[in-house]
Image 1 (cartoon, rainbow, N blue to C red):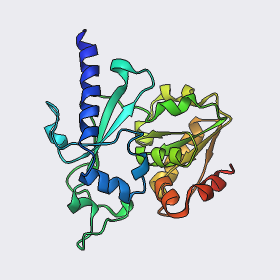
Image 2 (cartoon, one colour):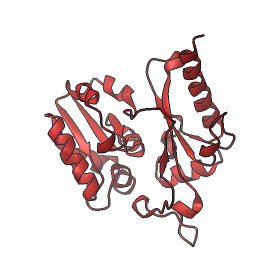
Image 3 (cartoon, rainbow, N blue to C red):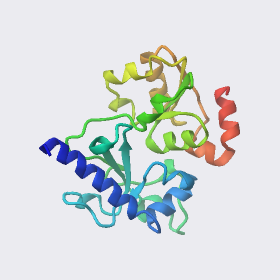
Length: 228
């Protein structure tokens, strides 16, 4: 096996390992709180309890593998790790905070693997036969939108967008851009509409991202917002 192939295989092994540590973990409880529990297995979400070699800094984080349809040693393109520490995501009474009120002080909410460039999340959705696709600001939103029956791809944000992402969306009649319901999210949506001629911004309201909207109002109302 070539060194590059070995690194790919290590990613697959790490993804499987973290997925096996998910059940009963704080990651599972957090994902269920976000209303995404039934989708965790489909997207192979994981928890870093026993880190792989070189992954000690991700201990205690939720693992989000970027799955690819190719399979084999290329089945996991990268893994992102989300902070779910109680001090960051819970109030003093132990209740989970809304995502936009979480307090990640002194560290980033997300961590990626060193040397890994920004990538699109859930690229298998690009193979849909539907004439539309959703573009979300984050992995959790893409997962929630998929659960609502709409193919969705996520991006870590407008600053992480790369020019070679554009052609992936050229064949769709419409790209529903789902930014968060805040100034940054609306700037993201506006920027994507500038880049993609088939883009259509969908504003879900102040304080709402796609995952929160679907969790509170349901898939049917979400699809109605998209005109589906």
